[in-house]
Amino acid sequence: MAVSQNNLLDQVLAYANRPNPYPLFAQLREHPVLAQGDGRYVVSTYKEINDILHDPRFSSDMSKCYSKEDQRVVEEEGQIPGFVFLDPPKHDWLRHQVMSKFTPDLIYSQKPRLLEVVKEALDTRRNVQQLDIVDDVAYPVPVTIICEILGVPRSDEYLFHEWSDQLILGNDTSQARNPEIRMQTLKAIKSIRTYMADLINAIKRQPREGLLSAMLHDTTNEKLMSNDELVTTSVLLLVAGHETTVNLISNSMFTLLRFPEWLERLRKEPELAAQVVEEVLRYEPPVQMLRRTSLADVTIAGVTIPKGAPIHLIIAAANRDPEHFSEPDRFNPERKDIDHLGFGGGIHYCVGAPLARLETQVTLVELARRLENPQLIDAAPPYRLGASIRAPRHLFVHYDH
Ligand code: HEM
Image (cartoon, rainbow, N blue to C red; front, top):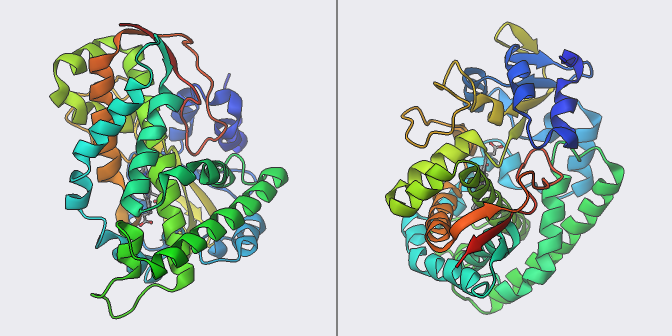
């Protein structure tokens, strides 16, 4: 049964549709730009989303949105937002501060350590024949690596885990209007900022290995980040650095277990890992949607989006757009048309994409190699609550030794 076009976005956000939002995405794509009854706009086709991501008339700064709720969220947080929510020139300057130190060399130098961490995670499960891909492998691997890269003590994970989860949930389009979640999120923001400010003070006194120390003690820059900017940027990297890759590893394993011929091929041909990961980023992207607002009245695909409108870019729908991809609903790591939007596009293109790719490739190869005859225990695993970041919350598998 077709749902009213006026509440298609709410349908996408509804938890009941988390396991399979794709029929709704197909309905959405019939109208590349769709106004919802309440002033929100949804964009779901590849060309239109890609154009918007590269168009300076669309902003990531939600304080510029006419939605009072969005303005209040920015106001209540009362801090400079992470640069993912800022526009040029501030965005560009802060992003440069990170990118100049988060180099490809630094990322690729992590590979041996990464393999060690994956092996450790699997070795602790050596005598059992069942594991939860999410909690036993997909979470510990990226959290360990991002802590080591930043210079955040891994032993503090028990502190920031909950705050970081809450930040992700509070930022999710499906939850942002829930007052209880909002209150919990504001508390979590305060706690994680206090934690980070204390850590930064400690690093100021005593430099150490890692990106945070490098940003703090940068001697090549005329202007250093303010304390506030440092805290916000470090929180952004810590949260984005592990709360997203866990979902790519989980979505990848779930997809490979649903198409076991590809798991078998990966086991025999580990060099396929890069293609498998790119196809998962297209087929089951962990980040399903992005937010923007318009800085002027702009007409896209015949629809005029008014200045200040809240706009939802459904990148997961664009990734299955038949106008752009051949056989979009087929999982095919050998496809040539793989220019997905799983890491976004334009000036906000994901800073951590090379790290997330490497982490997921190494983890999948090791899982494919180590798990003999893995079987999903629950073919319909529970999903995380959020809609903006979509992935199973648990993924129990049984395997032979
Ligand atoms: C931005 C996805 C991993 C740090 C983004 C954006 C997407 C994305 C879609 C664009 C946001 C927008 O345009 O509004 C993902 C996915 C990941 C992942 C799917 C894992 C599979 C990481 C990691 C890090 C990271 C590991 C850090 C180490 C960032 C940052 C931005 C960003 C800082 C903001 C970039 C900017 O505004 O210029 N990510 N990300 N991400 N990501 Fe990731």
